[in-house]
Length: 185
Image (tube, rainbow, N blue to C red; front, side, top):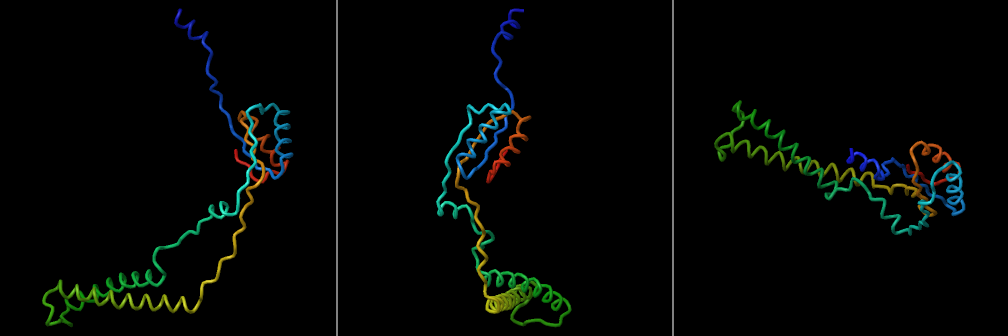
């Protein structure tokens, strides 16, 4: 009995769940008004944080990285693809021709040597065709510059407020109503 009484008299840790509302405003007055309105609906704003955010153009540009850039040029990729396809097709044709006895090289004796010869010749022809088609395509349609993507402005005042989950939806409505640029819950 004394063990249970000692456990119940200890203060219980605060295990309540909280949600953070983070909103970005252009003007500090809007951020302060958000805190006032949240306080009015019962949110404890004593631990709220407001921070001035200012990102220069170099940092903003660093967020956007061009995707799908290969280490190989399009001509090289086409040559490799052509070599693989050409070698595969030539291997099949070479095996069929050798099996039927239609074409035999006196220099190369045996199935393996004929297959190897077929693969090498097919890969060379495929690489030439692939690189030629790719270079003709590049010459025909020069790459135009992509239109510049509009970058979101990330300057302003960032407000972070901890609140219980039942008030989160109402807090988000208030934040949107005050014109927040971005809101995270």
